[in-house]
Length: 113
Image 1 (cartoon, rainbow, N blue to C red):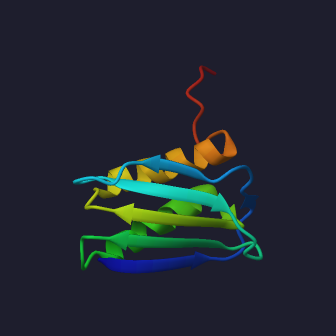
Image 2 (cartoon, rainbow, N blue to C red):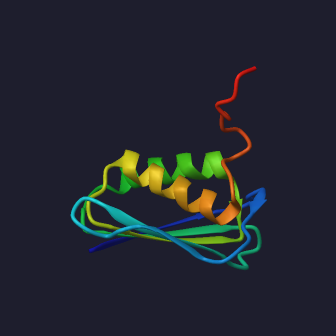
Image 3 (cartoon, rainbow, N blue to C red):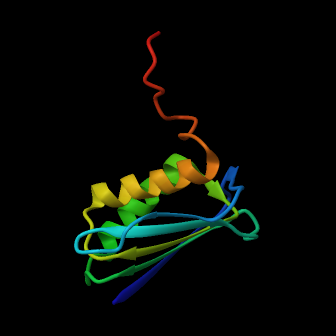
């Protein structure tokens, strides 16, 4: 297993609510645990993955996620068994939407103008 850690400062969207777990660790999938934490406005993400050597891809996926959500005072733990970047993004968004109760402010709503 490889462990990668990421930290982001100055998030603008504090998390609230109870810790949430989404996804299932199995062949080719992952689980995400997200929870509020006192981190002085920061967001900590720890990835435990069975796929070694993909740090640059994880950095890109996690940075994109943080750019979308701008989470503050949030801790995220990811247990990965080889999920694709698209599945990682989907699970991360699903976890935050479950915790916060909706999509990011910049996300399209799907409604008609």
